[in-house]
Length: 264
Image (cartoon, rainbow, N blue to C red):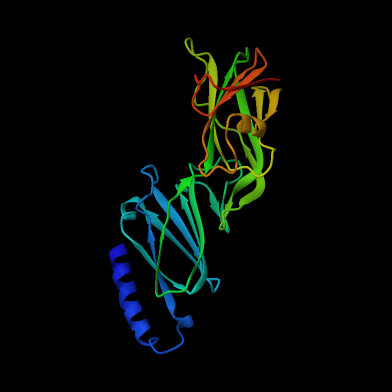
C-alpha cells in the first residue's frame, strides 16, 4: 500500500511540476517523505496527524509492518505540524489524544515536529519516544482484607503541538496481585502522561472506602530523578508501607537501594 502511495506521489509530482516550471511555484505542493524506520520494537502502530499550512488536517494510521517503507504525503508549502502517537488503544482523539474518563494512559510514545517546507521534495525522520509514566504501586502492612488505590491528576494527554492537555484524570486500577501466603502485598499498575502541575496524587483506601493515606507524588518524582522536561519519561516503582507510615520511590525497580523515602 505504501509503495503504491509512493509511486502515485511521484507521478503527481511530475505532472504538477510540469505546469509549475516557469511559474510562481508558491502554490505548488511540497512532497513530504516521513521516515519511521527508527520506531522502537514495542510500538504496534502510529496514529499520524499532519496539520498543513492551509489548515488542512491529514490523519492516518501506520502499522508496524509499514514502518520500514517511506511514507509519502503532499502538503501545501509553508509551516507544517507533524504529530505521531504510538500505541494508541483507549485514549481519545480531539485536537490531540487524551485519556478517557476513568481510564489510565496508554503505553504512549510520541513525536512532535513543526517545520517550514518550501521545496518540491522534503523529508523528516520521525522518532517516537516514551511519553508516559508507569506507576507500579505496592501496598504493604495492612490488616485489611481488601485495599484499593486512586490516582488523580489534571493532566490528561497531549495536543497536536505536544502541549499538555488539562482535564480530570481519575483512575482506580484493579489489583494485579493480592496477598498470598508468601507475598503479603497488594500491587497495582496505572499510567499517567507528563504532568503540567503538582497535583498528581496517590490515595490508598480500605475496602470499605476509608482513606488510609493521600500523597502528592510530584515532589517524589523529582526526588527520584524524573523531570517533566525529560525527553523520555521513566516508570516509577512505589512501595507504600501502611504499618510503618512510610513510602519509598525508585525509578529502577522494587529492590533498588537508591530510593527516595518519606514518612506520612
